[in-house]
Length: 199
Image 1 (tube, one colour):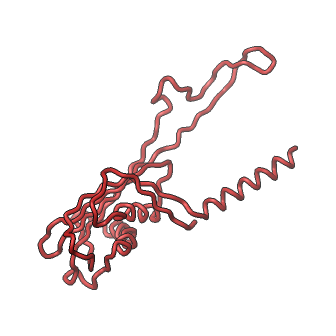
Image 2 (cartoon, helix red, strand yellow):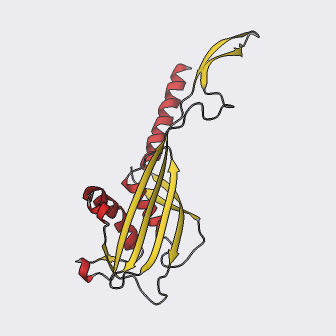
Image 3 (cartoon, one colour):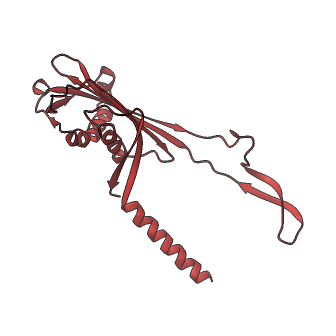
């Protein structure tokens, strides 16, 4: 029996690892707003940074890297210089961690000593434990402006939450979700799923 259990556990672990290395889906709630002219095609862009973003260049570099593929899929090409770009793009992101207290819900058992019935029919003491994983809320935002006039042409946000802090691939998928319907208007908010393959 122990040997069978060990084999089953090994197969389960193998399947879990294989699943992690396969396709995963990032689901985001997306809202977008457009004033993009119907006859205007996406051409070249340059990233624009606010003063607060310029103060943290490494963080902004990673955010812009996460947004590049999404912009390319929407039809944009990064310009050789900011002065030659047709539009400017501002990107931002936030990640908040929330640790749930075991006593947030007074009607749900969170662990500790308790009394319970034993198999033989009598009641006796027991000890329970409960672990609540932290939750992460993520949001990415993107704003496209006409470079010459400064007019805002397209704004989009994508948000989601999970028990994982996420990684650069997660943020890239969220930017892709934010631009999924570009440049058309769509229902706000809406659920957009992006599949990623990788580790």
